Structures are given as C-alpha cells and as structure tokens.
Length: 501
Image (cartoon, rainbow, N blue to C red; front, side, top):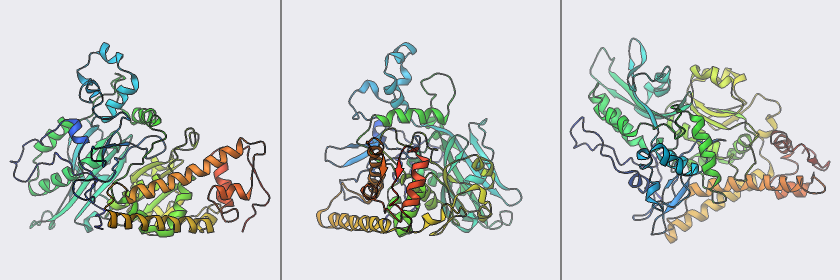
C-alpha cells in the first residue's frame, strides 16, 4: 500500500494555475457542484475514491460532514447539506445571491444555512516575508483594511529558516488560517543568501482550507521567483471571498458558523462521519502507538493540551486536529455543558493572553519557552513524551489493562483492513474511517452506559457496568471519576468495589 505524505492535501485544488498559463491570469473557476464532486483520495485505485471528508469547525471541535456517494458506489467529497447533491437545483449554493429579500425569506432557514455553509468563506489573502533587518513582515494583503496584526508570526513559524517548505494552520481571532511557507536560496547579500515568504488565507472555519493547499504552495513559489506579482492572489480573493451570512446584519463572525454548523450536523444523526485530511489519523496513531490511549482520555476530559515540535509544523497541526477527533461523541445532548474542545493549531508567544482565557484547547508550538509556562496547559507533549504537572492527572498517564486491550483491537482491525484492501481491492473502507469510528463508538459506548445507569432505579456504577463501557474497573477508576465530574453525572454513585489498583 502506498504511503501518503504528511504534507499532501486532501484535495488538489482544481483551480491551481498551470505552469503554462501566462502570469497574471486568474485561476480558472468552476461551479460549486464541480468543485464538490472531485475525487479526494489519491491512494484509492483508479476510478474509485475512498470516503473523504473536509474539515469542519462546529461546536466541540471537529464536527462531521456527510460524504456523497457516486454512482460507482465510491465516495466523493462532502456537501455540508445532508440532502443529496442535485436534489433541487433551486437550492444550488450559487443561487441564493440572486434571490430578493422576500424570496430569501421563503426559503427554509436550515436550507439557507446549508447553502451559505457551502460557499467559499475566504475573508483575507496575504503575503508575509522575512526581512533581514525587520524580521517577519506583512508584505501585502486583501482587503487592505483587514486586521492582520500578528499574522506575520503565525504564517512563518519560529525556526522555519531551518526548513525548505512547510504549511501552517492557525487561528487569528475568530478566524482560521492556512499559510504555505517556502525558503529559496538566492545570490543576494541583502537577503543573506535566502528568500523566505509565506502565502496564506483566513477563513470563517477550517472546513475548506485544505482545498487551497496546492494553490498556496504554487503561489508562494511564484512570490519567491517573482516578488510583488499579486494578480493571481487578487483574482483568487475576488472569486473566493466570503459572503455575508443570510442574517443580513452585515457582520461575519465565527460564532455564526458554529451555530449554523450545529443545526446542520444535528440533521445528520445517526449517520455521522468525522472529517480529516487523508492520512493524518493513521500517521497520528502510528506515531504515538499505545500513548494514543492516554491522549484519548485527556481529550475526552477536555484538558488543555499543548504539543511541542521543531519545524516543520504542518504535520503537527494535523496532530492537533486528530487530538480533537478523539473526543467526538455523536449522542445528542452529551457534552453540551462541558468546555468546547477547540483546536488552536499553531501558537506562539503572541497567543499567550488568548490561551490564558481558555478552559479547554489543543494547540502546537515550535517555541520551547512554552514548556516553562505551566499555567497555560494541563498536558505537554514533546515528541512521543506525554507529561503533566497536575498531580490529579499524573495517574492518567499510565496505561490500564483496558487501554492495552483497546489498542490491540485497534491494531488487529487495521491489519484486517489492510489485508482486505490488498486482497480484495477494497476502495471504500479506509484507515481514517476505522480509526475515527473506533474512538467515536468507544465514546458513545461510555456515555450510553452512563445514561442508562443514571436512569435506572439503582444509579450505581458497578464493576460490570464499567466493563460494559470498555474500561478497567481498577485502572480506570480515576479517569471515570473525572469523567463523572466534568460531564455532570452527579447523581451516579460509584460502587466501593471500584477501588484503586
């Protein structure tokens, strides 16, 4: 089976200008339906693509979008609507902008929300450069009045001078960003032999950012070779800039996206698929091995997790996303009252004040100084080393018998899947689905059991009910107590038989 690079985007954006096109020519644009129906997993055999999902940023971290099946039975990238594509041409995403206010009011609110979600939501495009005298600088941006203060330190991560190329996901206020960085040697004493730039975009969510990875990589190479040539970026922004939400209040905020995403995703139960860049989840679990079970518990407990790694930072941003995926629950109403487990992606010292206010997050950094800021995080991950300074969490870093058993089952399921793909040419199932659904089902199993016990005449957690959750009555007792406290199961009693090991 061919391995996929950490750097590979889930989709190669169809609108990337080819090398033969004259400079300054705007990227070719297709309609929204064509963009949503492109093959999305190059690992699949020809003529068939594995299930693919885009990133989404609804409440509680990554939220699912639904894949749309092609006639050959394989999957295409998702539309955010749960209705089949093409069901009603009147509901095509590009149609709403032509509706009058009165006509718009006649369209159901959920349909209007879905249509707007399917729109491209780029709020800014920018170029950042490294100046030998001034350091990182914002070189150019659209729109000109956009507040991009500090984005120059997000788009070029600390230590990036050591790598040739990289990509970085980050948050800027209420927006999410993706930037592609490149470092090119030049014969220039002024530039000290190297030219470094990054081309990036900001969006209302990270749902569609992966689509533009190839475009940004192409543009940063152009900026290195021909500095100051912004015509393709101007055309891109005009084509992809965000439209105002149908509320008509003239304000574009991430809160609107989150609220709408919740309404849209609610209609997808029980068929629920988690979104991810292809390959990132399998690489994530292979990297951490059994330690993935420790991260799973900490994520489910909504702890503040900070991941340190030197550049390149792109694959580490994927680990941030994957950590959020470990905590997904598809049972309606569960986790509504707990802190939102939000991905911050790449952070630097400028984000310290923002992180101080967060009750729950997962982020990554290339700056070692964060390790000393112990009040900013609950868990610090350095390479495969997971550690904490919180005494109450230290026992959770030890694997229980049930943890090892779950990891063994996960490994066996993966081997069976790989065998099926090799022997039977299975192009529908993927490692990503297997890993994501494994933890989703485990989480659902825990909370389903807790709800059943809480609703019974004897709301006591016994060793049998704990085993029914897939947990170890002894080794997971502390984890279970934390879980009951955080998720508000105050009425449940814990049997005295659940003693510490």
